[in-house]
Length: 224
Image 1 (cartoon, rainbow, N blue to C red):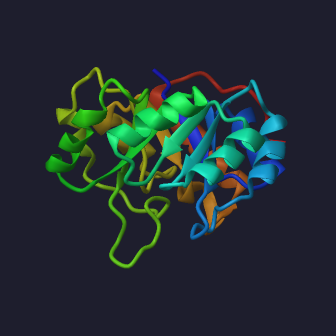
Image 2 (cartoon, one colour):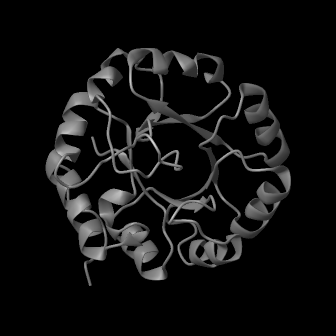
Image 3 (cartoon, one colour):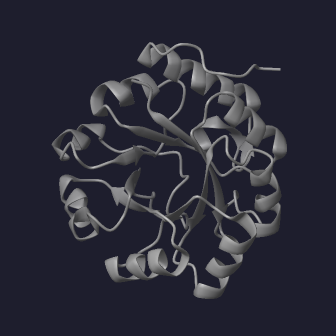
């Protein structure tokens, strides 16, 4: 079965179009000033409008304040809010009630105990995202190009819907799927030629690798 695929940290119309043409179910725009993938809400909205309805639009924020969230939601009109900070269950409920949007909550994983932290969020978020804990010294909660021990996912209750993130690329996605059977994949740095610079050929290669790993038929769209 072909997993959902989110290409995250998009900044150009070419990368957005290629991701969607190759079969991305979700496209992510990052609103975090310290990230090389940071984008202004008005530009993100323009990029999203070009493919709206063809893929789910995801707004990625990190402990954003209410004014910033208001602007992001107004200009991007996302389908999903991805909360990648330290948002409490109470904060998640506030955000959901305020905007009427589903929430994907990200968690950093290094050991089995890290997965237990999701328990208070079960039933109040639509989906989880599991990423590797950032390396020492990194100011980015995600997009660091490092992975964690995927075998930890095997202990997760099968009812938990999630996306696997952290260090995924064309060379390891087959192993990631074999080990985890993840229902969704999130890739950012794994399709970049430099931090924040999406590479169209690398996007193609990633989708080709997923297709080969899953035995799925060719995805829609061309490589023009």
